Image 1 (tube, rainbow, N blue to C red):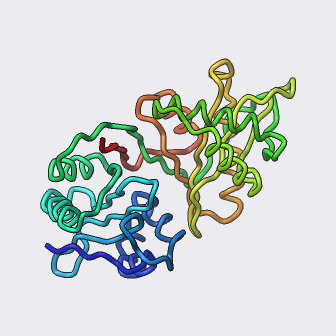
Image 2 (tube, rainbow, N blue to C red):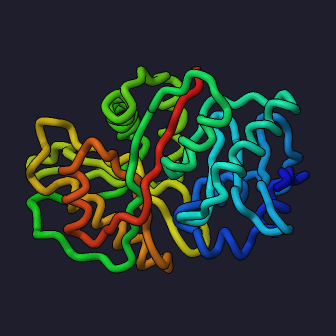
Length: 280
């Protein structure tokens, strides 16, 4: 096996087109990050490549700071442990540092076993996919696009989501900046109850021609269990499907089976797991 590093993310996308098309949902992070930086020259903080055998991909990888090294491989490919050792050795020989690793859990574990070091689990998720929306039961209230006037509320909720989902203290200014951009692009949806009180939110995130990803789903604890999350996510999915997207993806916390059931009820199904491990 050999490691192949590409001069630009665009060349990574072109050379692995068939693999990425076949495993588009599983490889969405690498697809999206590579597309965003398509013509940028690769560097120690931005690189994409593959471990190949007989000129065919075995293990694809991408690193786009501040994200972790992201891995993709076909399900049940028995060559993954060997490919992971090749990749770890290549990174070490070329003094390429990483902050962590993400991807299907067995891929992460194969890489960590080969790489060594003190890795700690940051998040454990299921990748869910929706192709046809199942309309949820009606719920009193309205769903609307959030605007800049909602900035403080949405930013506060996003900070709360980070604390709850990954157990980390967010950087408020960074969250505020990211939220401002999302509100300017009109990609955040907000539900208000009958009294006009905000009760739930969701936003569209990664988006390519054929698909979109829903993220930033949050309902404050005092408003949970009332159907608000279902209605908010369904409204966003309805809009995305109507715009021509073939399917919608969503990452859901494995530690939250309630959310898993909520999303299943409106048409989402689990496709694959995805983990993040931070390297100390």
